[in-house]
Length: 421
Ligand code: GDP
Ligand code: IMO
Ligand code: MG
Image (cartoon, rainbow, N blue to C red; front, top):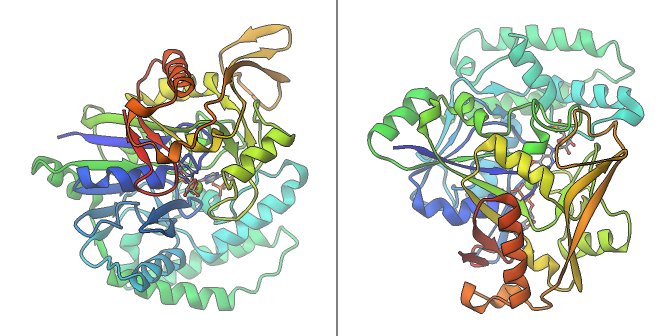
């Protein structure tokens, strides 16, 4: 068996949580492979909204297994809160949520380092979610990190205090308060809660399931343009958000990757700083933000909005090996008379369809192609046979440019709001 992958092709918040929740019935296991609680994946089930940060979006289906893979960084506090929130909704994670022992832990001082480092950057700040993601991955690659497997060892507290002291030494370089006692107490309590969850060897767990013929879906966080290597560096996150990250984040071989489902909104958003060639700082941008309720699921920040960027999508499709597209939030465009798509960039005097080395350093003017809107409420349409002609034209145009079929069209936040193509 192979592992199917579902990941974002833009700058995050493409609607990954919703699509994973819809596709979950086809799978036995849903596994997160990277990122941490910087992610906010929104699911709307039976009219009720839930935002997941670390737990895979398959958890709402009581017969599904979920795994937090070794490529993820876990904040025990956030995870314990998520487990409790699910419990309050009558959803038990018992026997259905596993953590890879090799997943790294986010310490309270990682969060402080994140905040101090961002504050010191001034105008050049990344716009991090301040969840301690960057510092936790730095400790992982710096070979200082603490992992889930370590919490079961007798010397865990010692190791924790050693690493904390190291962080405090670093923090003394910044003008910040160093009192973490309350925060630390809560964190230590949540470590105890973590010990009650099931920690596994992620590699053998996934490989054994594959041998048994189980179907696995790998759930991405963030988006390809936020990838540490291939995104708009330095305005990126600290992990590999692309398909390659599935191999290192779950312990798979390349030939074990099956379908790669790439998700894009029918327009584009970005939260945090960094280049965004199609951004609209005008009424149309505001209309997209209001119609799409574009406010961060993790931080509540207003998202920057703009037209869909096809060169950026072509790039993301290329590096991910996308085999199917899911186009989300198409209903947000229902009221628009005209819909635009960026088909190429003007960079200086050149026209280009490539992503430049440093998108932020270049003056990029998007070349737009305009399409008439469909002016129809798509949310009520459940079959492709009922699509308005202008929507069909628009979808054909997107597919011809991206050379990948659109297989899922999402017309609203709820599970039911999906048309299979
Ligand atoms: P994720 O991080 O990729 O899972 O996406 P988020 O949950 O951060 O943001 C997507 C937002 O759009 C959430 O509020 C979803 O409930 C909502 N959403 C998802 N799909 C659709 C859709 O097709 N139409 C509309 N109107 N909202 C959607
Ligand atoms: P989901 O999974 C949108 C952005 C932050 C910031 C940059 C670095 O919900 O799509 P970090 O906290 O990783 O240091 O932030 O990345 N970012 C996201 N933007 N959706 C996300 O996750 C994001 N996770 C991080 O806004 O610009
Ligand atoms: Mg999100």
